[in-house]
Length: 466
Image 1 (tube, rainbow, N blue to C red):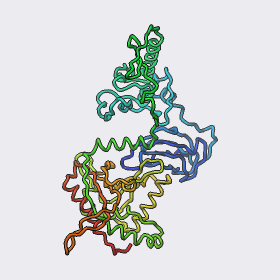
Image 2: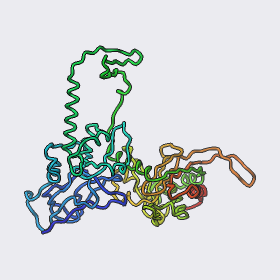
Image 3: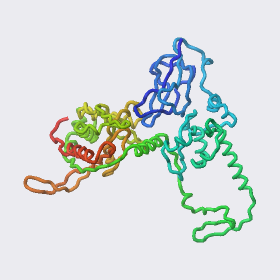
Image 4: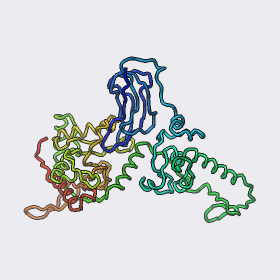
């Protein structure tokens, strides 16, 4: 009889933690090898975690909606012999956990209500969330003060900003603010407000006819009229994925020096080839061919000529990735975005690329992507033309150094150079843009690569086979 640890698996090079969405098993339940034990979520994809062994769940170490570091033990499974359910236990609620780790916190119990809050103490810098405060990078507070997630959650719920939080005296280790400190501060603040509100005032209302706003005669407060446009708003909570996308995008702009270059390309041959072959392609291959695999094919050929576009930065070192893994931004039914990755795209022909593109896009839209499907990308393509945009300035998908956007394809009259002279013809035209990290890719290389992709698309062989 032995206990086997079930750990949070590695889910990608840039993923450091995951959120537990749902436990399918509880202590005392039997589990088969490879049977799903729980569902987790990262900033890239939701996934199922299977059991590595056959046995009985001995202990669950993290609850649903808790954020767990990669590599942490999340459950223990007893193998070798069965046991009664009375032998098994689940971890105590958050206050008991905090009581064991920080006994001083027991004096004033607090139960967080947000589904996304972490139920364990970990030192992280406070980030203000008020609309009136500017978000600051974590590093700006590292030399000042650290706050546990529990303290931050209380501050956010009570509308306490960073400046106000820094003024609270802490009784914890090294003068840190504990749960007891912030709850006492909130209680004292509430009592003071109630005391002010209970004071009897002799007021005379004065109305400003221009603004339709009333003031009392001692200027203690302002009464906003019911037709105030600020009152006519709708507040929508971000879902988990939207929060993660927002953080990922802001982090990218803070990390990379973004520059975007644009090019216009004539994709007439490509459009005519697809129109001519799409029915035969579907009948013979069993897949519909879109423009995306054709774009990826051109990108891969160009990266082989300019490999620095498939790289990342670690400190002062440039890491060139020899495996060309192309991410493709995919819109989800709920409006969010995810980037599944075509692994070793340079080793696939057009048929292989088409199958990968269609398979990953379908898995993304039906919620069946695996964690590995969104990891290790080296370059990203986003097709903004799908939604009618002619061009865009995409944000780099970290830790990559470049991302390409392709706009909508439109017919336009263009001047064509021929041996007999210039003429005007109707052509299928498209804008492409490349956002790249100016720390290692200068404007010259960015433009050269962009034009290399454009040339591949313009010189598409209209007589090629698939």
